Image (cartoon, rainbow, N blue to C red; front, top):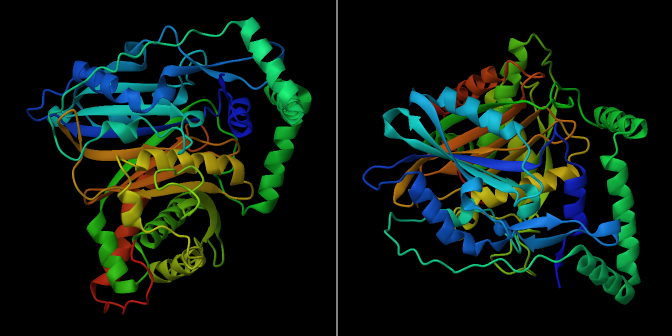
Length: 475
């Protein structure tokens, strides 16, 4: 029997438009060294590892008449070379050129008739480096049956490893008639499934129709969001084009601030972003008066004792945090953010950074994808979504090449013109900022403000005496 899309998956698909493509991405930069890491090596590496994520060789097929939810089927024409593409920058390619390429790729929707993922091998970076940009539809990654492809591509040492072809052959694609018969039999066994399918199909039809009622509903939803969230330039319907900003900072700076002022690394990251948004708004001559706040949705990991350790799907929840952009003191901002997050840690369900970083493979790619799924369901009444995932603090390798930088590239949800992802890895903290190209043309300034806000916190810790630990887990 074919595996059907769940209601949550169907909602993701029906809510996707050309303005809000539902894919997450990760940009990784590698130093090939003597490994011989090139496009052909990447193809061979993915061909070897894709067996661990079989969903990446499957496509979605609809049931005639919408008698049941669509099903996953093996793509009979699966072509790895279609999904793994080669690109290049004019040598010597800069980080600015790379992020422009990334923005263009992020603006394009994935082909719904094929498996919903792509990987780009980008050559020509200065210093002989190369980049790998991977994007996967949110529907692919649920953390239970499927993790992100990026989680299985990286190794803790350069290898080499023996590539063993898995001999995969696609199962025969079901015919329209067989899909109908299977749906009828399933509905007969479970009338509730029929009702759920009918309701989901009706909802999908309404959402996908370009009717006046649908447009009015979008306007009403946007107005409702403005009523429940503080005013900000981040709650504007996005266009089809994106901007991407990449910022690299040092983890030791966050640890220094944490050691002096208390809290966690996560607190310091959010306080840095708070200061950066405050400074950026000031460059736009916008008010940042005392008491002004930005409400952020911060997906966070929790412990669910009912799940296996490798089942991550329901171990990410949304946590809403008020970022005090109206506070002038960086130290007070940090303490206010730390206090706001303290309630989450005191539930006893919060997961320490070292536990997340210890998940097999490079877990940040999967956790960012799960965080984006949570944001779709829980972003009402907030100004922006911030996903922050700790990664391993040691080098990782792909086909023998060392990964030297990694940037999350989060998607924009409907009603949002900004999204921020943060990943820590091997002594660095990497920010990936996605913005709408038309709504926020000056978003590059926010990247500079991130560095300045961190410098401000580091300066505040220079002459201060370290605080005594208060029993909270340092993450």
